[in-house]
Length: 162
Length: 275
Image (cartoon, rainbow over all chains, first blue to last red; front, side):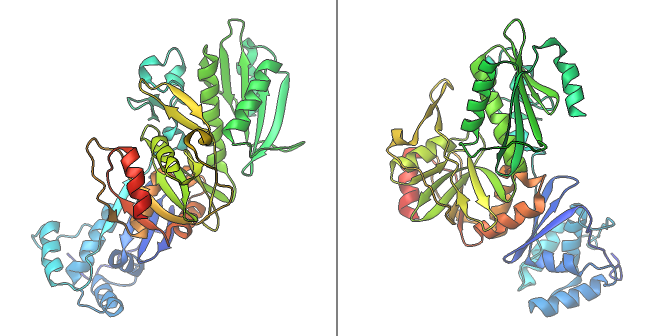
C-alpha cells in the first residue's frame, strides 16, 4: 500500500448520471452499470491524478464531516479498480487483512457510510429481450434460431438470448 | 448499400411490388412486401405493433427497412436492413415475430422518449410501473390491476418522455393461457379503460411471481431503483445519456419497492390499497 499514489478516475467510454445521494455510471465498453454510493462517488471524483490517497482521505473527511481513514479510501479504490473505473488498475493491500476485515473495522468506527459500488451487466441488445416467435421453445418448428435474431437463440423461458 | 445486399439475397423470392414509408416515435421505417396480400397484412401488423402511432411519409431516408416476401412454396421471409432475420411457413407465427421486431426497432431508436419493457397502469393520477421481461407475469398482473380499478396504460412498454411523464402504449393485452397459447384481449374485457394523458411516475414495483411468495417490500434508493430498471430499458445502448437522464427525472419522486409476490389477483388488491 502506497498512500502517496494518485489514482486517476476513468472518463472515456462512461456515461455518468448524478442521482440523489448516488452516482450512476454506465460503461459503454462492457455494458456494465454501476451505482456508487455517496462515499464511493466522493472518492471517485477526487481521483484526479494529482491528489494522493492521504489527501483524498482528508478531502472526503472535510466534505463528509466524519473521520475518514486511508483504509476507507483504499476500500473505495479497490472497488473502483475492480470495476475498471480507474485509468490504471491499482491493487491495494490492506496490510495483511482481507477486504471483509477492513469493512468490519471501518464499519464499526466510521460515522460515514462505507464506500459501496453495486454493479450489473445489462443485456447487450434490446433484441435479447424479445420473445421468440414460437412462445414455446419446444414448438419452434423450422424458424431459424426459433425466430430469434441470428446472434441469439430461444432459451427455455421462450426468450431470445445470447 | 443495404439495398444492394438485400436484392442479392432476394433473388430467389418474388419481386417486390408494394412499399410504404412511415414514422413512429420519430423513427422512419420503410415496409415492403412482395404482393398486395402480404403488404396489407404487413401494414396492418405494423399499425398494431405501434399502437397506431404512425405517420405516413412521402419522402425520407428510412432508418429501418423491413421486407416481407414469399417463395413458391408459401414460405415467408423477413428481412431487416438487408439481412434475413426469419423465415417461416406459419403466417401467424411469422407476423407475430415481425410485430415484435418492428416494435423493438422503434423502441430502441425512438427520439425524445425512452421505452422501458414494463407493465403500466394509472392509479390516483400517477403511474405504477412494473418492469419485467416477457413471461414474467406482467400482463396477468396488469390485467388484475385493471380489473380492480386501475387505468390501463400498457402491458408491454412504459414510454417516458424527456420530462419523465409516462405515455400510454395501449396495445391489446396479450394473454397466455395454460399451455402457452396466446390471444389478444382488449382492455374492456377486463372492465377497464385506457389512459389517454401522460402522467408522472408514482411507483416503480420490482417484483416477480414466486410460488407461495409474500409481498414484503423493501424501499430502494433512486440509484438502486434505476439499476433495477436499466436491464429493461430499450434504448440504453443507442442513447445511454438521454436514457439515464430520463430515468432519473421519472423516478426521482417515485416510491421504488422490491419484493417477490404471490398470485396476481391477491397482489393487485394489496398493491392498490397500499399505494
